[in-house]
Image (cartoon, rainbow, N blue to C red; front, top):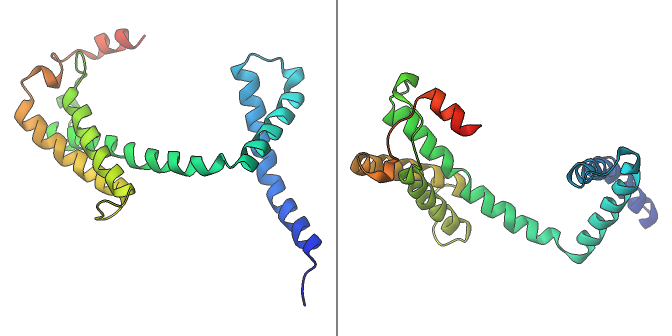
Length: 172
């Protein structure tokens, strides 16, 4: 038995309705907060956000979102490789061995760029081992370990340790 197209369309609309009402509601809340719009105008702002979302979807802007998410999925995970290596290998998993660094730890940034670059190459299909995220974490971990071992006494590692109190005052 064939389902009439109008019934299939109604099922599709009703199935996506609950998901997209949440999306429109959240975008309306965010827009009101970002632009300091009064809460009494939120229904109108939510409607405008919903219409803008539909227009962007029809225009095909959602296709670019996949590229953006792929780039984020490749570039962000290698940060974890640097952090894991610093805590578990360099500081030997003891919090008393860790302290904030004055300035910028360029070794960590360089290792992150190396891991993220490798993961981006993997996302583009140039090289493939496991997954771009996992490989980026592993490469950043190894790069940080090697670079820190070679350059820990240079300005690339920051310009000395700070106390927790100093770090908290800098953060404020």
